[in-house]
Length: 143
Image (cartoon, rainbow, N blue to C red):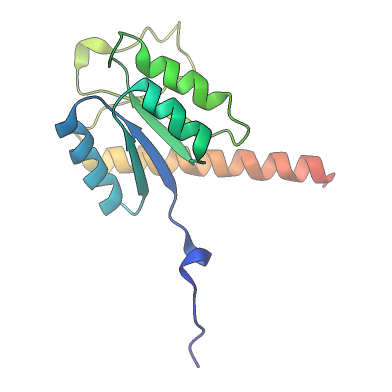
């Protein structure tokens, strides 16, 4: 007999995608969902902060420049303060908007032109987060 599986046993990794450009947001949401992720979207830093406070995400992807030049960095800073510690990354389609790597060492920049590369980087970020969480839980359990 084949065992019955419940959808809750195989929850999709939750991603919060933050981008003020509707076309970019829809395209990236579609690509991420096709890649097997559950995607929530926000069109501004304020909306993203609200969603971070309401739900839990494995990954937060944010455009760098939205309502202000560093709105994306503010979103990622807020995400890093959450108890559940999501993985974070900046995503941008503009080559000239790269953040200064010396200033923002914890911000990974992902460019969406290469879809397989994009999905690979996202999978790596989520896997690294899961590994960190497992190590932290084992350390707290004294193992």
